[in-house]
Amino acid sequence: MVDLHHHLLPGLDDGPGELETSVAMARMAAADGITRVVATPHASHHWRFSPEAIAERMAALRGALERESIALELGSGCDFHLSFDNIQDALANPRKYTLNGSDYLLVELPDFSLPAQLTETFYELRMAGMTPILTHPERNPTLQRDEVRLAEWLRQGMLVQITTSSLLGEMGKQAEAMAHRLLTRRWVHFLATDAHNLTTRPPRMRAARELAARKYGEAYATLLCEQNPLAVWEGRPLGEQPTPRKLFDDPQEDDQDEELPWWRRWLRRS
Figure (cartoon, one colour):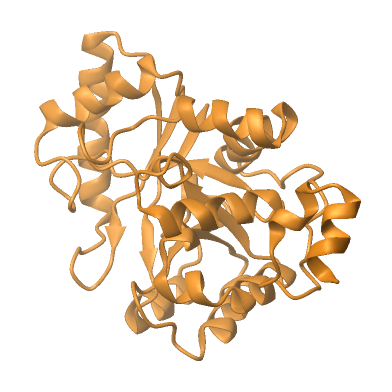
């Protein structure tokens, strides 16, 4: 499995504070079946993005993993916050913040309010050659209440990543419910851990992958955890994707209707 969203590097953000914890997280990830991790420290007004510091921490961690015989490949990128300065710098330097220097940019929304100009911002990023991957929309309170804007962004080419712990119910009931709605609609392209530590935000994917396979099919789970993230890792276009449901309908309708027999759907709507 390939984990595209992982706060693994020490001392750069609210992830591990020291190299020893990073090594322990890498060991846990490898034991869980993760073979590749993109280290994605926050790039925000609070956490300064420094390619030099990332390169230094990456070299130290790779050396430690080699000494400990931990079989985990590392890539680099960031968890890109949509501040004005960040956006302007990314438009001027399109590969500075992307995953493994590819076209793919991991984008985090503000926690509570969604700026009105977000759609225009995503358009500008695409015109500069970047493909935004929206991180954990299922955890955003605004999108939990109104998914219409998410549908609009998907129609315009946005890709979506949800957090493995959301799928397992560890991020609250609303995040869990929305994660499953998005998977039912096939609006999701990646599962990722968004790991920060060994306890409350651990680097585990396997349980979520197995749940996705049981509920949504092995082929879709393979896309989410292996094929799609590997394409991003290698800087390739994604392959053929499942046809999204309700993308041009009212996304607020009850998705559970699609899982019911025809006669029960008729009774609910009559």
